[in-house]
Image 1 (cartoon, helix red, strand yellow):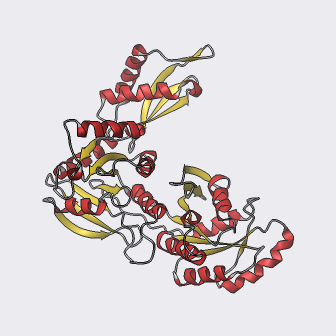
Image 2 (cartoon, rainbow, N blue to C red; image 1 turned 120 degrees about the vertical axis):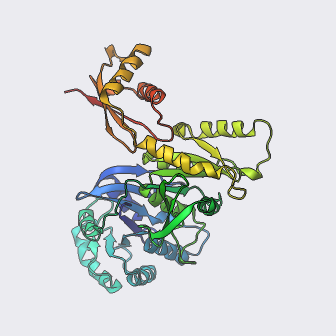
Image 3 (cartoon, rainbow, N blue to C red; image 1 turned 30 degrees about the vertical axis):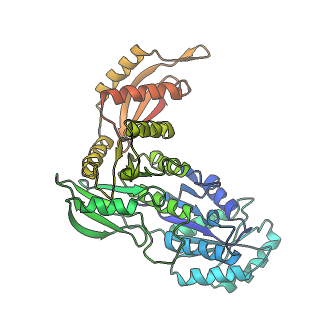
Length: 436
């Protein structure tokens, strides 16, 4: 089930980013804080009153070459499409502007919950100025100070009231997967090719993302799948589809709902920085990952072309060294018949459990091979370990001091676990806990 989403919109210089940073960093308990895909931060996941949610700073969608009003309109359109709750930020210093009125009209017609913020109310004397903002027709304005962080708790209290309580029914036997990647890598062609490759399509079912349709199908082996549509937009002309950050938002929502992610790379163009960043979202979310190199039919090949390309992938995606790589062509259907079995195997690995007795045998052998490190004369002692979760497999190692389990030794332990068990395609989490 995808988290509910709060989108922050408004004209430039009203303090959208400051409010985003306040909500993401100070006023809530952070679950995950993800750097933006280009130069600034646009996305974070947090919790308020026990509800986890995503927050989007649409200020990152500005395109400087476009007209001023078009930029603001585009932000509002993105928010209307993607958000469960929209926060419109205005400024008490400038009062109600034409841009504020334009966005307010759009949001009023959207039938989405809208919370009106009047920012920069940095002292009590300015509170009387907020009454002018009732003219926007969006209900009670909330006076806040992004620079001081005041008033934002009331805003989040109101936002949580609008979160849906619907719970997506989970069928334990169904594997959910999605294809992510930058535009024009062939995601749509791959989707069509996978569904047309001797599969039995059962039905199209409504997805939890806005206007998306998930496709349910069964592989030749009888395994049921749900392919989560990352297209998201069905209303043509609503949003500029080539906006890079908008495609990131759609991918993030698909990642939240998926068990396995197919990270699609254009083999004809090679690896770009965008590929590495968007793949990082899937890794941080603990999802199963398969790297799919598409358009392999267009690549001029020599004896070791595939081997060299895979070596480059391993260099560029060091954090995805566990992910299998497959070279395919949506056009020629090359190797596409292998994908369902790979997805099924990665899903099984995500759900694999190791008994505590076997895990502790692995830990004993690991220490025998490579003795625990010391720091300032103090040696790390590993007492025992246990697996506490799946999706991804997560292991808690009880030690004398958490700080002594350095990243390098935790990685060594992870590698020893991977040697003993087939965790291909899934991250493995190692958590140190001090034994009480």
